[in-house]
Image 1 (tube, rainbow, N blue to C red):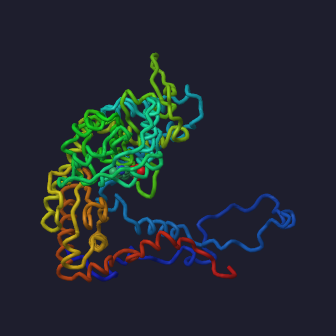
Image 2 (image 1 turned 45 degrees about the vertical axis):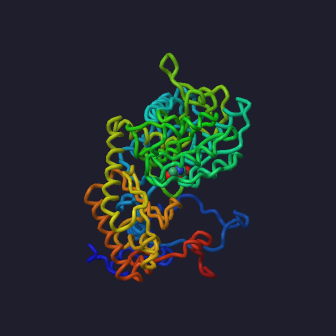
Image 3 (image 1 turned 90 degrees about the horizontal axis):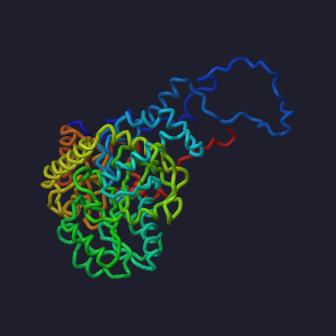
Length: 499
Ligand SMILES: *Cc1c(COP(=O)(O)O)cnc(C)c1O
């Protein structure tokens, strides 16, 4: 394996940076030809000083040069189509191209959100049918498709919870969250005006029941739990947890970003959760990364249905489709109908796989993760050694202590082996965390190649730590100052003076 991975940049010359498009080409080069002008030319005086006096400094290239330029740019980045992308907590699965075709069908892509409902019956039917499917998968009967992301779904659900408590004349103050939670959970709580109470995880990676018991009282509005959690572990006490939460009049929220592990196997509604968001862009096949677009539908119990955002698409008695406002709606959380194209992709995915297919996807995702976990736990310590769900978290702490190699170095070195690194330094309760989620779409050969690379890198950390400190060697740019790259990005080309 490592024979073809060299230290020198020359091993991957074709992916390296090239000239900028502004620095290439020649003044005479064109990639278009306009027909001769057949109307009178407008003189500069007619434009009354509005016309520029010199031509803009645009690149002059031929068609083949511009085609190669954009193709080259596309190959400089790493995507799901380049190779395995085991980013934990993100479900970076391969998204079937047929879903892209579906959302580009003219009847969907050409719709206007304000056209008369009688002319958009198919779109409404699609939304009602998708909501029905998500209700079935989640075990929670009422669904809004409006939220545009997982974090937005959390906000929507907590606003719904607050409306429920207020309607009961019950001004609660706090929301309890385990320390393994995604950062969006406490952020959502603060945005809703509640105080965050963080409780620790137990030694098996689940909710610490004593800490939860101690944190719960009649001032608690909700308990937010990701299940399976961000360690990739299904909580062993889930039924008791939601019972305890309800016993003090609080509501139980499930962060459903990890639905990819349990579709068709276990339903959050059956576990006693009152609400759940689902990241369609993780579990239901929309390419994501770079900030969107996504969709974070929220599924709730019948008791919370009347607080959902509106309007909700509904099926009427005569088989036609319309929009209704829930009785005590919290209002809109998104313009129009949310990210409709994402909803089309999700529905196409549900129809293509069917109930059995969704279950099979989850089973395969869990099997893949457990396979990798068993192959890797000899090379990297596994702090919570249990059967995992769709992801698992290794620790790079031993490599740091014994060889001065950090998880960041391991992640950078993986790039030289042709893999996108896993999620690192999250969840924060694991020292030098390495969080791996292979998903159901990686075959055995790629899982093995990834495991081989990880094991080879652990050996390199022992034999040549500096090799890892200097990685990556084969990428278009080497190691960036990540703080500066975010704070002072240098992304604009400016013409030299006089151009
Ligand atoms: C991704 C994720 C979120 C946030 O979802 P976005 O769509 O990125 O807003 C929340 N919780 C968990 C556990 C996640 O993995």
